[in-house]
Length: 565
Image (cartoon, rainbow, N blue to C red; front, top):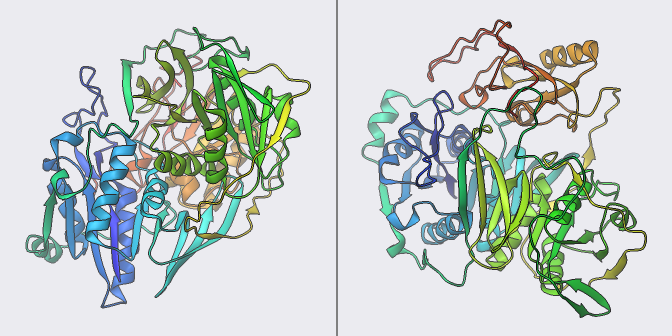
């Protein structure tokens, strides 16, 4: 069996992560470059299988600048059989679409039975490339797995969803992505480091693939604005969040309308794919998505296999309903509506659907947006990156961008529509290969705590607490303070917190105050929970060397009211 593991060089989270304000690219000299930890865990899954299967071949694959070769070679020192690195100056600043095209071409050239990736990198946190690759390669994908079992002809595991967990299985060849619930990676020993120097290391360029970085047929996501986020004044709100309350249309929109099949769609229509809970109700993110859409155009809701009755109350004048595959339904709706933009929740299900649709339609994809605005050229996505240190705006080179919106980032709400127009779509199945996903086992929550998004007080914990039993300290403290409970992404992926109301991002987004118990065991968990701790609060932090497994000292931080979210 040939297993290809995708790895990535990222800035060390111990150092400063910066963007070059002139070029918009990551400042690679600001901190030490390391192999992303989730990539190391992915490699560990492959190496663990190879340890008991002598015929298994493990290949590491990366698209990175030439200096990253030393970092990629670490995968060989850990035990991989060979490495492939794609290097080309034309890929400088490549967006998600171009990156997926190149990696898919490299995978076709290399060949594979199984591709293993991480669910999200520590620098981009997009979480969409595995789904895009599956769509481009037309192979099934079992994504966001917390456990993995590799067989002779299939791969299976437990998939983490927004509502709980579900069994997932796929026939080979396939793609899987794993979470930080999988075991830590092994350390390269001296023998492995010396052997890595003699292992095959192939360097490829775009000349080796049938990929054109300037392909005029593919819409690309481009950065149109970049600035450092100014420190907010005491009592003020972050400028990246929309104004609370009823929405107001931003700048000018296209005018006019067209009629299709008895429905009238405005020229400035924004297609919104609404998530549902396992019981079929609309997810709580629906109101924010429709509110964001109403700021830049006329919302048109798409409900797949759920209850469309709520969509009108949330602000959708037109509602399209469909059954079957979400990507096929989104493709049919986009062809019918011809929207200015497509908005999808940045939930696990949402971003996977958006990724597959963008890859299939060759549309520009912007992920994890905190807002949307409109300018003379079209709809623009607003992003808050590197822990809120930078404000970024992106748009599509042409056509309608596909934008995933961060849950809880938009406060605007659209006006309710008493009698929305409802139309049932006829969806033609694409016939794409897909993994088999079982019934979602919902996490049972019985708590009187406030919801995390919008809570005045938050107590959060990190993976360094060590176990779910010790994470109970966070629950107890939150109950004593009447606060909501939050968790780092690493703690969520490691299964320490079972409640779906916990938020898996390490960056503080509190309204008034936040307390974080941050005892980290990994580089990815050492990001500060808040940018501005109170001067009066004492905080201790003992760093560890990357080769150390010892936990850091517990770190308590109380945010001031003007904490930068």
